[in-house]
Amino acid sequence: MKQKIRKAVIPVAGFGTRFLPATKAMSKEMLPVVDKPIIQFIVEEAVEAGIKDIVLVTGWHKRIIEDHFDYPFELEQRLEEAGKMEQLKEIRKIAELANFIYIRQKGPYGNGTPILNAWPAIGDEPFWAVWGDEFFDAEPSRAKQMLAFWDKYQSPIIAAMEPKSKDEANHYGVVYGKEVEEGIWEVKKIEEKPGANKVKTPFLTSVSGYVLTPDIFPILAKLKAGRGGEVWLVDAIKKLAEQRPVYACKLKNTVWCDTGNKLEYIKTIIHFAMKRKEYREELGKYMAEIIKK
Image (cartoon, rainbow, N blue to C red; front, side, top):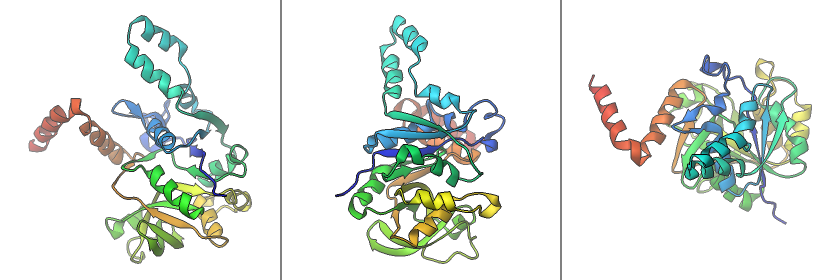
């Protein structure tokens, strides 16, 4: 019997040091893209793909995220009294998006740790895991593309994109493999930032997004710290690939919004602002004037 993906895990416990001082008192996942925080884009993507439970792995300094997805009684009351019903409807919809589960991160450094922390909430189900500072403007969405292949293959899947150049291997992980049908590769090897001078073609750039099976948890539990003394999810996936097929979904019709660094964050704001009718014309004129200067 085929299993459906009903749960998502989103690690959000990082300190966002690349965005200091803005993130001194505010979570980087709550930084706005026009008028919506980064984390909300990711949650909405999961929900629109049919995921019901959102597991957010947080830290002591991430209460702001929990508050964002809660019911703000005082704000709702004030909006209702002011007759701002559209805004009231939007605010209420946020809290009703999904069933939110919050887990405090504990354990060694590394992006494998928050995934392992989610084990009690996931149990023996497959799940979708994504980082809280990367999202994608895609049609169909990243989640829908990945889950469509999950429905067919019922095996772990990594999100990937066609590289623009070998230089991407300086900053991101790469995937080698064999295309088994359009848009899906069977993974033969994964390397973390091998460098442009060492990467071999063809390859795909590994991006945020993983459909994982529960057999990843025992591997993570036994995994020793790797590069930088940290526990890495990619190391666990390598071991998982020794036990069962792992695939890479080559995302199509996709704009990658890596809001984990300042320049890409600025580009993302401009990208989404230009998609809005009320801002497109004036913003276009403004940018043209700036370029002229």
